[in-house]
Image (tube, rainbow, N blue to C red; front, side, top):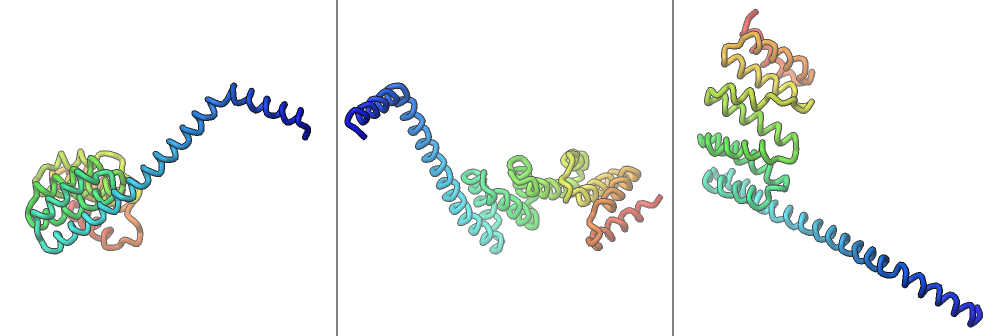
Length: 209
């Protein structure tokens, strides 16, 4: 390349930079900021998950040690600090079961309601609804239990939710509605779940008609 050609190329670069330089700089800066934010977000999520895992282990130890005060405190800490992680949903269900078995119905309801309201995973949310409906049934608050289970369930839960609805309806004396719910349960429960199907059939037979 001759000196003249080299100068022409240099002038072309200068002209291009004068026209597009600022825009290019901003694009590069934005890309760097986005990349930094993405990496920072991933790091924050990994750190949150790691810290939540430690707290979840503490909850499991409290459950195994039957220390219900510690169970409630750790579950509350988990929800306050790491409520967006899967560990919070798992903790709420584990704490609810432990508190319920210890006779702390109010504590169990609070944990299950938290999972219903905040769980990101639909399966955890569905499990929480089923267990909360059972607690409400124990309290004879059948209408609240039915309302809780009124939404269309996930396919995998159609059978067990229909069964639970049948229990609530039967407890209210609504025999025809209960029969319909139990029949739905039999239609949707897995064919290989023989124990669950036998129990539903027993309840259906007990209703007569």
